[in-house]
Image 1 (tube, one colour):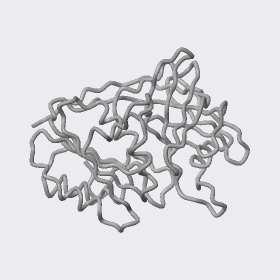
Image 2 (cartoon, rainbow, N blue to C red):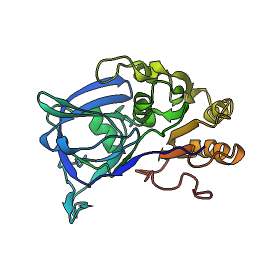
Image 3 (tube, helix red, strand yellow):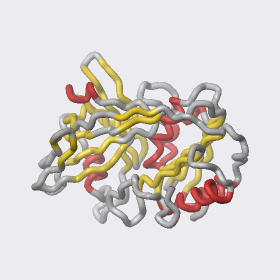
Length: 287
């Protein structure tokens, strides 16, 4: 069975945004709500849309923002420009204008106890009025039409996208979620209310929580334990690239599921700074 995923391309834009408030959803996850007049034109329709966020120089606090030149995004030619990709968690219109929620994972811990890395450090100390630039998304793709089961595999970095998948899936679609979590500190995120104050989207799904502290190989084993024989089943997996290589090989080669039924995306890679998630997950076996 072939599933249709409706999609659209968007004009690239670089939008300045300011922090309105922050909420610590878990020890390692913070929801940052942004506002700003330029956010009103930001499209965020699909569950896995992503924007590129440009952060201030961690040494000086100066924001070296990109600009649009002939419809293309041009990075600054001087100064330190730090950027990372994130899934827009929620975009909403309020009485005070458009608000954008991003949920950022605080990766690692430096020797002084602060989160390691410029993006994590910024997120951990973000305060009302802090400014950055949001670029994109370049396009959107919806939930595949005609599915009756959706299987989601996600680590902390992919949980905002997994939440959007759940929220956008039709009510009659069965939802199975495998979460690859560092430890039970992340449980607070899984159980946290949705941005609109409603119940956690994960409450709608059958969720298995795996903890990396318990040892490697659990994600692959959990996926192998599922019955994926249904022709109307779609599998989406995202997270640490090396962890997902075995998952992709099992789905694509051992089970023989076609690319129209499987999407596996390496959002980041252990030991690699700012990996481009458009790169093939497994260079030896690209789609």
